[in-house]
Length: 208
Length: 427
Image (tube, rainbow over all chains, first blue to last red; front, side, top):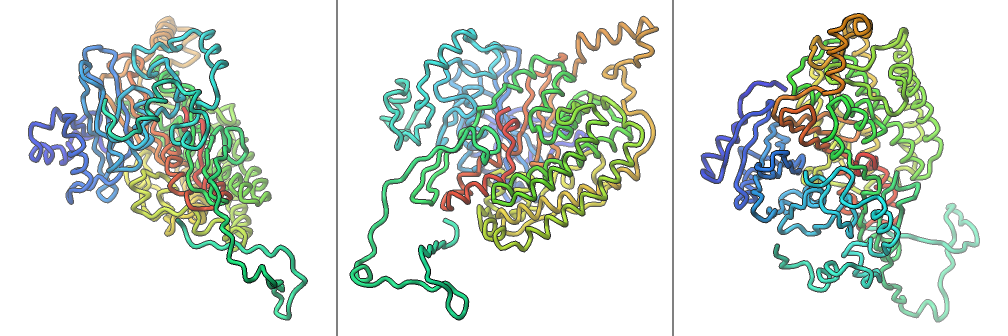
């Protein structure tokens, strides 16, 4: 891999096609980064996957970055790869802090995004509209200390050790089933109120 | 829903006929005339794990069964979540390296290398030729170790115990080598940003050469036992198959992706550590089932041995650490006699090494697939974000897709074929 600061041609193609929806782009550490606006991100990513000259058929990673500088927006980061062209592209969506942290899910484009987006939701609280099964993945469903990778989340957690232990011992283990499983298992009454509500209203048409 | 499966159970047989087949007792009387009873019942929900030997760690699978057929698999992960990525935001770059040991703990040296390469690109550090070759040795050695464990444990899950013993014997020999080099068997912490923690001890290359002679023999013995073994074929062929398109769309990676027929290997497509100068092949499967994954991993071990021998042949003399006083500590002897070196050492250890503001994504081909290290720096000595792109996380995510429609016992074989390490999945 050369460090030459030659931008991936996809950056210029994107700008020519989507114009103002493409924000800053540049080469950092040998990788081309393109910022796109949130509202057209799904459309742009779908185009990158399918356009004959692009063919980013492989989603390497979805993650998010929060900077220590409170003024900077959160970023959702997509690492894309075109296996036939052996090219990589990093697409970022800036999420202003005064807006809701919601972006469109790309699970319909790449199935591999399913768990990756769940992890971003779990760790950063960013929601993915249209995700088929958006629930926590590394933390448990009833975890209520917040989102661990946010900068305002203290390293040791929000609750004291004593409180964490108390909650762990008081938890009903049946509540650790997912909504899916609860269509079969009998743990409905042990669920927190918001989960019961989600289960009762169904997951379709959910709006954040 | 996989191929058509019929299960025939001869409950009793009076003996064999002339052709050697079991004589079936025909149903007689009213039972023969009665229609087939409807045996469908409610689906059953069973819970496997998190403490179960066949889940390879603290993985919990909730399985919905229709009889013995898996209708739905819902994996639950996170039981080993330790917040490594969060911890990394509070650590200097060199302090993160021990954390990388504990992600994919079956291939710690390769994880160390992946992180060090990313940090070095971020800081703009060139490593020495000897260090480059030693890191290739570390990566390939850990690939063989990881695949040995995979083959052993998968064979045990499918019912072949011997393979486990043979493979672990080779693995022990490899761990002896790692122990001689780094002082540790599993948590090696081999690399430092800009170099390595130690050079090879005397006589080590000869021992590695001897080990490289022995491993292919063991692999051949295992192949002789499994390759055409009827039970092995029956349990692995057409089980958990993923097509090339599916494997790409599901972001499968490493041997899982290649077994499905996608010829992608980071070492070939985005070479690092001069991999483009080594002569080796990348095995690619055809059917994407458990059997092809077995073939791919076995061949990868042989190719890794080839790379190891080439690396030993070209191993140059010279320093293992870059000549970069920003990141490399002064020599111990200087440190004890020279005030400036003492101050330098103290500042570097206490304040850490600041990385210029920027970011880097560095992929390497780990045994389980593409291990990506995504580092974001704001110019301080601790990263703003250290993201591990864990290969077996993505491979495990496709488990429901692979297992649904197969038998419960196939689920165990499929899960074994994924080669998961929960330390890396949960981080």
